[in-house]
Image 1 (spheres, helix red, strand yellow):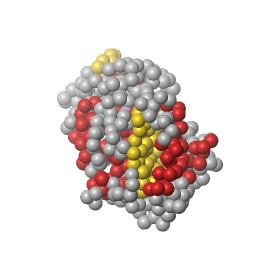
Image 2: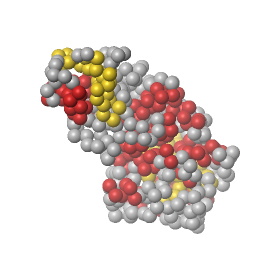
Image 3: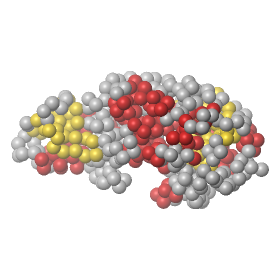
Image 4: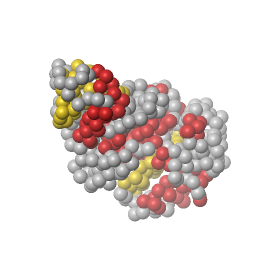
Length: 452
C-alpha cells in the first residue's frame, strides 16, 4: 500500500541547546493527572510530584545504573540496540550504548512530531472544519482534524471533539429554505495518501487511514471497526449530507471539488487545542493524528502539507530546538515507515530538557506519555511478574514495527530521582521477548537505588 560514563552529554556541551526545550515532563504530571482519570493499580502507588531541578533525592551513579541493567542489555533479545539513561537534574549521562547510532524508531518518532506541532502550530491552536457557501453550492472544507466525530462530540475544550452533526446543524440554520449542492474539499493536504515504506494494507488492517485533510471517525468503515475506507473525505461528506437532510436541508448532489474563490464561510467547528491532540497522539499512539499534524507543520512552514513537506518541517523543527540530528531521517509523522531513523541521543535531549522548564509550550509531551499499567499503550503492560514494580513509575512512549521495539520516557527510581531513558531495538527476532526486555530495563531503573 502506497512507514556512558560520567561525561556531560554532547548535546549540552555548549550550555544551551536543549535548555530551551523544557516541557514540564514529570514535574507535577508524573502521576497526578493520569491517576485522576485512570487510577494506578496497587503495584504502582500514586506518587507525589518531584522537582527535577534541585532535586534532593540521591543521585544515581553511572556504575550503579550500568550494574542494574547489564544482564538485560546482554540478553540478546534486543538485537541491534541503542540505550541511554540521563539524570536531567545534572545532565549526567549514566548509561550510553550506541547513543548516536540512528535506529528505526517506530512510533517513538511521534515525540518529534509532537514537539514540532507544539512549536510550529502552537499548543492553543484549534483546527477548523468549515462550510463555505457560494449561491446554492456549499463546500465542506477539511482542516486536518482527525479527531472529528460523527455526532455527540461534546465540548472540544473540555475533553470532547468537534462533530459533523453540530456542523450540519449550524449550516442548516445559516441556509435559506432551498436545495443545495454539496462539494467536499480535502485539498489542504497534497501528495501521496500513504507514507514511504508503510506496511502493506495499512488501511485494511486498521493501522492508519489514507491521509486526508477531511475525515470523520478516523476513516473507519463503521464506528468501532478496525479497517478504514479508501476515501475518508468522501465518507465524511456523505455522512455530513445525511445530517443536513435530518436538519431539513435538501442535498441534490455530493461531489469532490475545491471551494469557490468567492465563497463565504457560514459555519465551522473546531478541534480540541493542539496540546490536547498531542496528548492523544502520544498516549494512544494515534497514527492518523501523527500524519495530520506532520502535514500541518509542513504546510505552516511552507515546506508543503505532504509527507515530504512534513518530514522536512519536522526535521527543521528538531534542529531549531537544538536537538542532536546525527543520522536523523524523518519519513513520516507516525513512525509507520521503516525509512525513519532516530538516535536515542535525540530523544534524551528532548526529554532531559524538562529540567529547564523554559518552554511551557511543549508541556503536553510530558502529560501525554503513557503511564505504565494505567494509560494508553502501556495500560496492559507492567501489570505482573518482574515488571510489576514499574507500574505507575514509568512514563514512556512505545514503538513497535516488524523487528523493531522502542520505549522512551521517564522513570522515578527508588530514591525518588527522576531519570530519562531511551532504548531502541532493531533486528529483533521476537517482538514479545524484546518488549519484555525493554519493560524490564525500565523497571530496573524504577527499582534502582543506584546511588549505592
